[in-house]
Image (cartoon, rainbow, N blue to C red; front, side, top):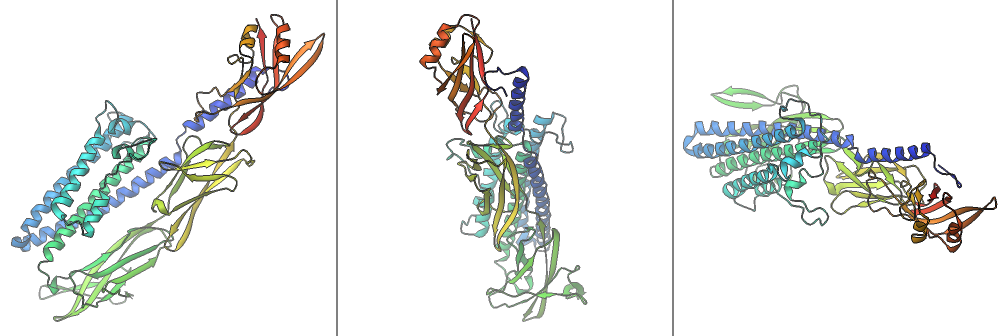
Length: 548
């Protein structure tokens, strides 16, 4: 940097431009961690959707088998179930076609699902297809599809709003606009794409596909239970497993209930459970399948709650897929009954990302926006903290604001992410960010003239001041204000250099008087310039202009 009354050299100007260009790259860089997190989330959701599809195929198989055995009782159920199957499959495939439209908008018309997605961080393709002006407005179509599907399941099939299955599907297929955000009021379809990388939109669409498969399975189970509830027989009992969650974060705890379907309140069964497959033996006696415990297998006997449900809890210290099963033993008026059950769950790592929205650094004195994404936990359980001296607070409309004061001297801060769990608190990790001062401003003479410029003496007399402005098309923060706090004016009389120190950016009478005496071609120099900005009081380069 130039000091004293020396003008800035071309090399120093180049260094300044490189600094601003580096800042621009930081601002334009979409965090690879966010993209990677969305890829992992999308893959996890797709695996979950496959599991739901397997479950629904099993339920359709049960319905078809019952319809073949008792057509008078189950034929209408089978017809209605397969109508739901056709509508669900069309909805699912329509979303697949929507995904492909988005990929082709980004990758080109020849792209397929098998083509590697090279522009996962594309911020425009999804918006153009979903909500863009002049685009196909597929967001409106998606909203209509979901509303119609939701009405079909809730209003025509379930109807009873007090049922748990109604409330679950109502929540899973909920459409929520974010119109209360005054700065960025978004409709539901806009929340799926605006400001989001393409892979994020694809992950959100995959989640909708998982939700409709899950809702499809819930409705089928409801239809079967509703019909069978009118004709309960002790011989039609089956073992059931219920778990609040089938995906567990490592270090968490898996919990499920194992119980008899279509039971009465006097039943107190014995539940035998094992993780050793096969979970039980079976034999055919007089054409009837009978189940029994396997020899040489260790079974756990589950405790029962007040309703006769077996309670299964297990610490989850390693990741992977886990399957368990066993038998429920009940003494009926026909003798011993052994009813089989199986279930599975998945244990994975808790994923989180912390990304600065505008830059990959934090600036002292500015409101630095930050996004924190945590998979596997609800948002209200996420806890975020930062290195003492800096502060972090929730932002309106989502995300967080980090403030680093002028007095903070360290070169980096650390954001820590943790979650509240049933067992207490769990620390997920941390992310470090560099801390920089806001870039220095350009000093302008008479409001418009840069260092080295030629100007008429009248311009100095009309606009007698120094101004400080940030002249950059790359710096992502808007409205950054500077003001000149102090400068030195140098002039020469009979070979002797004199200095006038001025507070503020205005030219005082002494400065104006000396400028008035200068001839054409004279250099007017201002050095030791101090300015006040968001990052505090700092010194910048001097400027020299030449009188015409």
